[in-house]
Length: 234
Image (cartoon, rainbow, N blue to C red; front, side, top):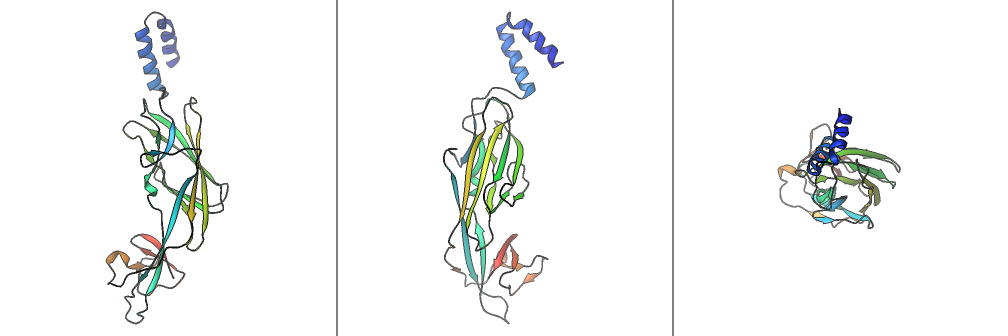
């Protein structure tokens, strides 16, 4: 059917320029390959990032000393959390407004010896645990949904300082545009200063073990849940 339409289009193209443009627009919409005036890019908030520069994201270790709520053992305890400041401001988009929906693929490859955690584009999390691990996800940008969250993290264990490095390749489905490649480097360096909380614990600081039981006295080196996040007690 599409072939017959193209034949009709070829016969009419030399006689009706306006009809030719309209039919071309219709074909492009049907095939999802409208010409674009924009290329795929990685953004940090409203800033377009350059593929020539490494994207650098600092991972912050926050150590907090909490008072005990166990009368039998009043010694305070320390909890370590890893935070990724403004990680949700990194998005995949285009460097200009779209003239049509844009289908593309995004490939993340681990090029370091630290793990990566990728939850972006399709709202599903995967771990790329070893060097060379990679995953490709497909997505679409539209005028109504012009940015999609990357949601990529360097995944570290507490006290395991170093660098997690990802290679991000954005490729439009239509072959007209070349792929765009970024290097994203997560740095987990020295811990922050110890923050002490001396007032009674609010509800979201209560610790639970991995089976859901409340913990009064956390054991050093064990992982617990606090407000839905995993934390390490020391």
